[in-house]
Length: 229
Image 1 (tube, rainbow, N blue to C red):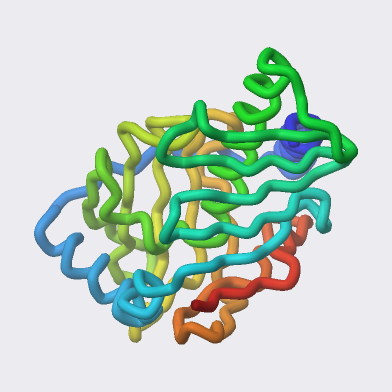
Image 2 (cartoon, one colour):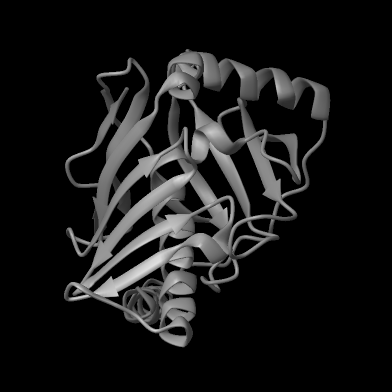
C-alpha cells in the first residue's frame, strides 16, 4: 500500500505540474447545526440504519491486492495481502494474530504485520464507508458555500484513523446522496483533490455502498462488495 500511495503522490504531482492545477486552500465552514442536519440527510439517503445493523462487510482494494472481511459485531477483520493472513482485533489490538504462507509469525514480526494491517484497513475501509463516519468521535461538521449556490458538508477528523487532521468536503445531490468529495489530507500535498462517490449499489443488508471511485485519471475499484448478516 505504501508503494501505491507513493506512486499515486508522484503521479498527482506530475499532473499538477503538467496541467498547472492550483492548490485549493481548505475552506472555512460555518453553521454547524445546519451541517449536522445535512449530514443526517446524507445518512438517511444511504440507509444508515441498515448499515448499522449489518454484521459482515467484504471488499477488496488496489485491484484485489488487499482483501477484507469485517465482522462489525465482534470488532474483527480478516485482512489478506501477498502471503499474509491477519485476524485484526479492532478492540484489543494485542489479541490480533498473523501468519505468512500458513505459518504463524513470531511476536516481533506479528506486531509489525498487524500494525500494517491496521493502517491498510483504516485507509481502505474509509473508501468504502466514509459517509457513515461523519459523526465519528473527534469529527466536526460545517457548511461551505459551493460555486453553484448549494451547500457542501465539510467534515474534519481531529482524531482516530491513521492520519488525524484530514478534511473532506462532501458534495450531495438534492436527495442527500453523495456525488463526490474534495480532500485535504496529509498523504496528498494537493489540497482540494476530488474523488467521485457516485457508483452506488444496494447491498444484501439494504445499505448503500460504493462499487468504485474516480480519482483524476485513476479508478479505485472496491472489488466484489458485500454487506450482509
